[in-house]
Image 1 (cartoon, rainbow, N blue to C red):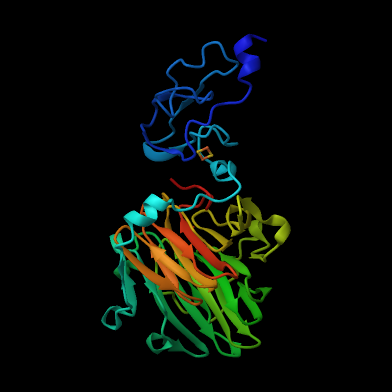
Image 2: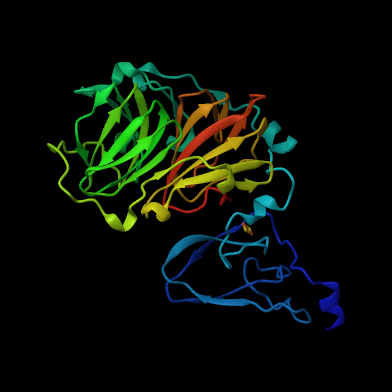
Length: 359
Ligand code: FES
C-alpha cells in the first residue's frame, strides 16, 4: 500500500448534496469515486496515487439525474440519500437561510380558489372542506390534487365511506395507491379482501376494480397515477386481479423504518407490492426546520399529526393535521415542524424512488 493510500483510505466528501446532472443517452461518463476531483461529480484525474479509480458508465437515456457527491452512496453513481446520514441531524435551515426568508409572505387560504393557500411555483396547502365532496351511495369523494390544480402526473382524491359497502370503482389505465387516514374495514380488489385500519397502504393496479367495506366511517387518501380523477363505476369485480402481486396491503412496521439522521421514514407502497409509478411513505419530522431543498419528483403530502409551516421561495403557509400539500417537480421548499410532539406525514410521489433523495 502506498503512503497516499494508507493516509487516504476513505473517499473525500466533495459535497453533502448530490449534483443535478443532465445525461445524454449513449454517452460515456467517468464518475469520481475519490471525492478529490474539482469537476464534481466527474473525474479530473485527482485520484492518481490513491486506491480509487473512476466509475465508468453509459447513460441509458437522456435525462436529468442526481449523481452522488458525498461518495457514500450504495447505488453509485446515483445519489441514494446516504448524504443525509453523514451528520447526526438532518440538514436544518441555517441562520443565513432563515434571515434571507424572513420576509416570506404568509398566505391565507383562499375560499374563491377551493380553499388553497397558493405558494410559489404552483405549490399549495389545502385544508379539505367536506362541503366540496361529490357523492355516490355510501361514498363521498373530492379531488384535492389534479390537472386543474397544476399537477402533471398524479391526482390525489379523498375518499370517505360511511359504514357499509361503497360502489365499485375502476381506473382503467392508472394505478391507485391508497392510504387509510382513519377508520377500519377492508378494501376488496377484484374479490380479494384486504383488512385495513389507520396508516395502512393499499395498492390497486390499473384495470382492477375495487370497493371499500367500512365497519365504521373510513377516510382514505387515494393517489392516482397517471393522473385521472374520474373512475368508471363497474357493477362488480371482473376477475382481473394480478396474482403476481398477491399482497397489496402494507402497514407501519418500525423494523422497516429507515433512519435519516434524526428523522425516519418507512416506505409503504412501492414496486415490492407492484407499484412502478408511485412511491408512498410515512415519515416523522422532529421540532426543526429543514434546509431549503428540491426533489426531482411531483409530490402529494398529507399531514397526519402535528403542526408546522410550509416554506417556498417567497411564501409560507401553516399546516395542521388533515391538510394536504402539493409540490411540483423541482419546487424548492422547506417543511418546518413547530410542534414539540413532532409532525407525522404521508407522502406519495412520481416518479417512484426514495424520499431521502433531495438536492
Ligand atoms: S450525495 Fe451521496 S448519497 Fe446523496
